[in-house]
Amino acid sequence: MLFCSDFFVKVLYVSSSSRTDLVLSGQAESVPLDDGGVGYYNKYLEVYILYFVHNPIVRQMFNGQALATALVGEDKATSITLTDVVEPAAPDSPHTMIRCVQGDLTSQGLCDSLLTKDLTHVFLLHGIMSGAAEANLELGIQVNLDATRKVLDTLRIANPGVRVIFTSTTAVYGPPPSSGFPVTEADAPCPGSSYGAQKLISETLLNDYSRRGLLDGRIVRLPTVLVRPGKPTGAASSFASGIFREPLNGQKSILPVSKDLSLWICSPRTVVRNLLRARDIPKETYGADSRVVNLPGVTVSIHKMMEALRAVGGQKALDLVEEKRDTPTEKIVESWPAEYDTSRAKQLGFKEDGTLEQTFRDYIRDYGTNKV
Image 1 (cartoon, rainbow, N blue to C red):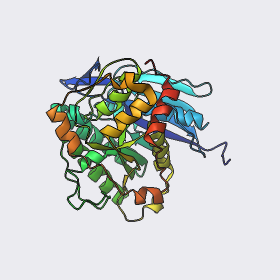
Image 2 (tube, rainbow, N blue to C red):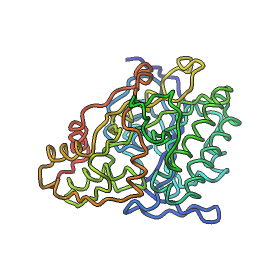
Image 3 (tube, one colour):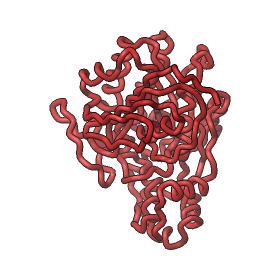
Image 4 (cartoon, rainbow, N blue to C red):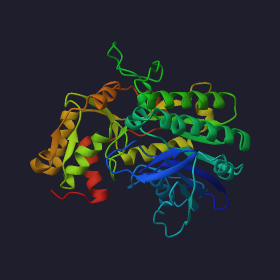
């Protein structure tokens, strides 16, 4: 195993908490997100890490805390600072100093204090998700677009050339191509939702800043993450986790779309591994090409997901899923292509996902939820 005992780098992670922010007069007021609400917002993790080498299997929820825990698992982190609009909980860490700070990403003062010249990596994971951004255009613009630009502009002035890993979405694409071929990075995006449009604008800005040498961007378009632990989010795809997570907890769940629809999905473990891979790719590998990469995933129909639920949780779990079509949700989900050619991602060393059944069993093993 490679290591360097005296080489420290400082990393900032900007992530999403399971909270909703209602922005009033420039102030962010956080309220719990119990039923999907209007989405969720920002969490920051500032990490000093001892750099190098292996990427562990991460058994945590997909958010900034999962990345912080992954760094602890790599035995690289020496200190971590988490900042949210409400004081965040600290992940367990016997060897890493963790500090929790309440803050607001829309504040230029906070950006100035966190986005300093000694940073070496920045992960941007924040966002108001698809269904929530569609329901509240102004909030989506403020969080997904304006706040992202504020972060990027602060960084390019305070810390030119810093490495920025930006999590985008396959929602930047519109309806599946009529050609029937899998989508690649060469296909022109045409978002079918405000969330996809806001992410695409941010992608374009970071790609241009990288072209100019102002920042070192890595833009990864995430599949639908399945299964997310915790409560439902404001994402239109939130049901995909809910129809598995809630029945295994002995709770009912609503299926708002046709079982004939298919999704491009990936497990939290694989997504976290691939975010760490994005961190480590030398910028020379990209050459003059775009910094955008579609991350690997698996195409599954809702029908197949239901079969996997029965295989893992039995008929009792399946009976807890109620089919109740919701036109706005279905319209958004239908606009997402479900098949992708991820040759570029594989060439760059990103990892492929396992089977759907294995993803479900990993979720049960990680979170211990199977009450049916």
